[in-house]
Amino acid sequence: MRTSLIVAGLSASLAHAIYLPANLQTGVDWLQGSTQQPVIEAEKFLIELAPGDTRLVTEDEKWQLRRDGKSFFDITGLPERDASIHTQATVKYPKKTAYNETISPMLKELDQKKMRSHLEEFTSFHTRYYKSDYGRQSSEWLFDQVNQTLTHAGAGVAHFFQHSWGQNSIIATLPGKSEKTIVIGAHQDSINLFLPSILAAPGADDDGSGTVTILEALRVLLQDKDILHGKAENTVEFHWYSAEEGGLLGSQAIFSAYEKQGRDVKAMLQQDMTGYTHATIAAGEPESVGVITDFVDPGLTTFIKEVVNTYCTIPYVETKCGYACSDHASASKHGYPSAFVIESDFKYSDKKIHTTEDKVEYLDFKHMLQHARLTLGLAYELAFAKFD
Ligand code: BES
Ligand code: ZN
Image 1 (tube, helix red, strand yellow):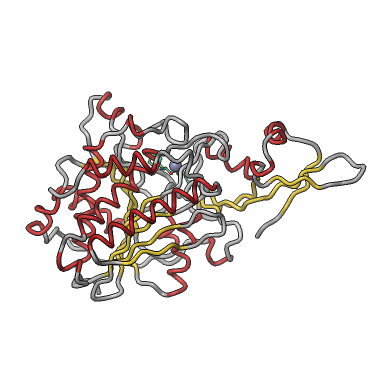
Image 2 (cartoon, protein in one colour):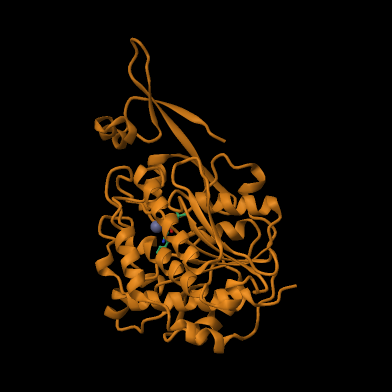
């Protein structure tokens, strides 16, 4: 549902846009009236801030809402039935973890140095803004890393899930005995909420950290012979979403397609921000994994707490993130059970995100390793779980 609005004159926030190169005036087109005053046609976007609470806004208004701390799905152009929450599948998860003997030695293989070097390269792109050419390049770099990981192991396939905006999402598939699927996700894009098309957005924590965390878990998961030879009960997929920062655009496209194809996703876990611990430590609180409890599947979340207790060496703390705060929300919206874990209690999470200061130097790789342990533990446990 793309609509446009003719705005006469210049609004304060658009005034500086005319001094920018044309390709940076995102969503703003000059209408060439021969003798008339210039008019601006601003593209409008349909966003959903809470179930059923939709609003039509300009792109500038989108970023203003984000700066004000509001989260939303961008549902522009989506068919009506895609826009609303769908019936939720009820899936039964194991009561306890069952593969401790196999997983414990694998945990030792997880390597923080690999996460650091991946993250250093990934954050060296000026931005990973989904509409920018840098964002397209960072996506290609990431695709190469995923492919190298699979090729080195000799299993799995990676493909781009293509989008219209330039940066594509990436999916790595490890086929199992059935098409029942476990999804592990992170978002690859970053954003500078002040001037997305211009300013640097290293996005080290948000969500470079989740990106390299799940890549490292994938590398080690592939060292298991049964996973390697397709003997797991279920298929496991790793997703790196594009355009999370635009309103969950990449993940909505993927889970909408999965729903249409009748794909059977039994669980989805999102890792978004896994590396920042300073505020927790400064407050004298114990380093912990933040388990999100709002807008998630309660059964999957209960099992994730078991996984933290078994495979991490730090505790979890329950916390909340609000409606549509990361890509797990897209999975839920399309009927798939999802969960979300973050670096800490929400109140101690990284406040430098979405700025030029979201840098590697502020992150704690030992903590990221805890998220990799959790990811590997969950992926393995659910890969071998028997679902109805
Ligand atoms: N990584 C953040 C969400 C987040 C923030 C998680 C702080 C944990 C702690 C994510 O990339 C983000 O910015 N989400 C937006 C919503 C999105 C749909 C535009 C938000 O929460 O405002
Ligand atoms: Zn973000």
